[in-house]
Image (cartoon, rainbow, N blue to C red; front, side, top):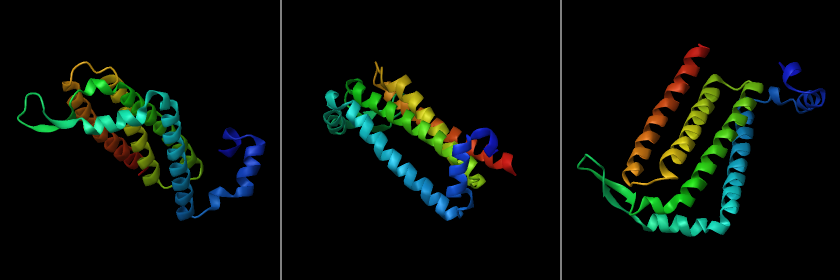
Length: 178
């Protein structure tokens, strides 16, 4: 497999680093360090991109505006911003963050496959890919261009649905490897 995916220089680097012979614990430590470092970079980039939009003030105002709002067609009240349509910039930043984390998960998945991680770790990464790409879709579809406040609750119902789909994707990967 190394012959088809990597160039000669990359193969030499892989063999000199001998990453495939690392213990599983060291591989997972490497993935954790890579993930956390990339997470901070993504957070910093998204903040930097939106610094002129006063992203921090939007975040503070978002949490300050949370109130109990009735969920349509139920007798239940849940937290929601008083006017959810006012936070388009915050939602767009959340979309960019979710999309970037989804791409990071794809990179982690490719590294896990190349380094022969366990099936459960590969399945977990696929679960994360489904969740983050699904969340980014829901954010752009329901929150960024929100026109009515009931879409706030539709979004959260969608997040629950995406979480369920991600768990099913994980289960299918584990079942396929058995």
